[in-house]
Image (cartoon, rainbow, N blue to C red):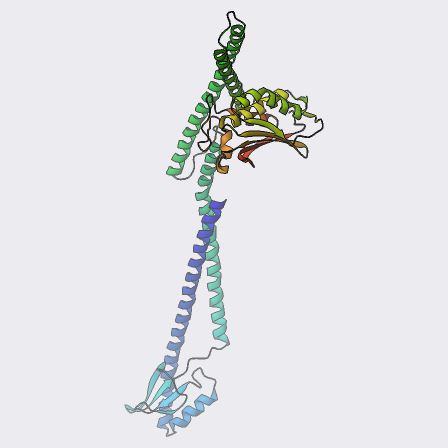
Length: 439
């Protein structure tokens, strides 16, 4: 609608300008024509009056008295406007003029000019003149209004016709950007616009094929990883109990690799299933405080090995019961802690908090410097995105931690945000409703 308004406004302004200029020219032409007509009538009347003055002069009556009586008598369009001048042009009687007389006629007797009659004042409009001009101006006004109405209608039709394909093209591109690749369109507009629509439709189809392939690959890879990782865990348990015993440093390294692979497999599965809208969640009553303590316990050794303090703050002192998927929320905390451990240098700290927020709870995790640009914070939740402004990450980075967290939050009908932390690093805030809708 903005495009239509812009086009219609421009064309309307042009229509008004054309109408005003055209109407002004009509009024000017009407005024000039009527003025010329009155001047021609004055010349005709003056010529006839000069013949009458000649007849008066032949009778011996003084012309100056005749002209004075005529100017004061009225009843004629020339009355009060006639001046008598000598043959040399010197005024004898009658009103003077500041400029050139509008008409002149000689008074002659036997071929000799005895005086010159001049019209020195413009005509006075009478009732008939005013009525005539009123009719003409009303007609001009009607023409102007009619012309403006026609131009505005043409502007509306043109703006609508020209903007419709552009709006359709905009909506089509907007739907594609929003992820709706199965767009329907009807070719309209000029050849270039229709060709652009066809090209966008081809791009949407290609995106749709790529998106379908990407989702299929993610789900397939996630499923294929689960079994080898599970088997690797069982073999590590067997290896740990084997005789003679295996070198403990080697065993711990293998266990760490297994932990990384297992987390990657779980994160990839969660992201893939969430992308398809099929992330399974089982809601049950749980205590968020217990989930936080479990997350700290399960990640405590890794934090200690990295030289990072993992602690809590602002936890309620009483038991809280909410309806969440406890396993998924623990996975959520694990993904957030894993992300912070990757970028928090030795000597830093990671702090977990829990705050009430009406019918929801705010889960807060802060880590110490280095921080992250606020403009880039929300991009951290994209799969495989890594901020180049944070400290160099440790090995085993999958880039799926925060994407997994967002998938779990979405499944609980909550929201997740990232920003600057009061302790210098990244703050991630998760808001989950106490009793999410299950449908």
